[in-house]
Image (cartoon, rainbow, N blue to C red; front, side, top):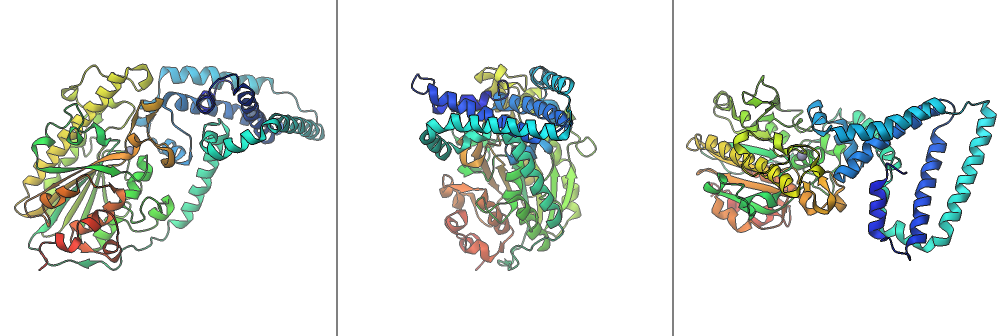
Length: 522
Ligand SMILES: [Zn+2]
């Protein structure tokens, strides 16, 4: 309670400021959270072996507390999934001397004390008796602490549900158990893949084949693109291209693990569930079964289950990626694509490039030195040790690199503009908090996520023969759009129509009449 719950108490004091009037209730809240934690420990740590569990929980609390205090993150189910799917490279990026110090002082050292000085157990019956006595005492104390403030607790529980997310280690433990049960149930289900958009129809014959490159961005906030009005010039190259930057796009999730599968799924944000999405065909599967050649190239972690049934190439290693200097660069994903396209002659092609983009917290590692244009930069993953200006500069330099990468993708597609209907669609997976309200990074629960984490960039470039023109898209530049619009937009790009897309209301598909856009249809 003393060392691993700073975020919890900060949050409580935000709701009930430290005034004389609030003092009694604050004291009661502090005691009740402590008593609940004690009851939790008392119940789980039975017998002499219980000391190992307590030791483990101390280490876990120290570790989670570090990330909660340092970055303002919450240990919910999504975050547990993110942590477990973090690769060695990302772990290195999150490791720091202050984390190690805190882990040793508040985790490993007390854990060692617990293991060494855990009392001897004389017999099972005496242990049970002692435990029950202790538990009874704790429960009585809890009731005594809560009773005088019943009304206060009712409103606290009703209006500040979120506060429990900060209780350490009880909430992280709850999330780990919930994550485990979800994972176990998903293993059973993955055997069958449910069909999606079975009623696909082709809208009219066209003279040219499609060549679309979709770039899945990483951690790119819309408000950091000068295309969307940012005061620093982060898009010098894209500004020279004929493109549309959609200024009002909401992400499906606040982390890669949620947003990426959701972007390609037909479920939409409100109905999105990880297992459900993984168990049914996504937009790329639908393209593939309709004869389109689909390739996924990944310079991020992986496709998060989206590319399990299509061709997948890992560009995080120098084996495929020729542009690696410390880490492999996004631009390396264009290497060898000419050969790929040549080998698929006469077919429609969809290429997805999954970027490293602005993956944090070490933004300064995400670009070669030529892109270190905004100075001074934050040269550590310990974002709190840097000034706001330094954090902003290193983040913005990474956007500058994405600007370069996307313009390279466009230059690449221009070579094919006479032979193909070409297009590039760039959509970021989620945004990032850069210190606003003391929060860093992303993965906040969606219902309480700040706009910085959900307002994402989406940019469209179209070749001269594409089914519709940028002039037709332009009027919808500032319309409210979201990742939910992607599924049908991808199908439409290949002149595929499905009942679910025609029926779609309110979003891009509704605004941009599908039939009207398919200019080739008489
Ligand atoms: Zn991401």
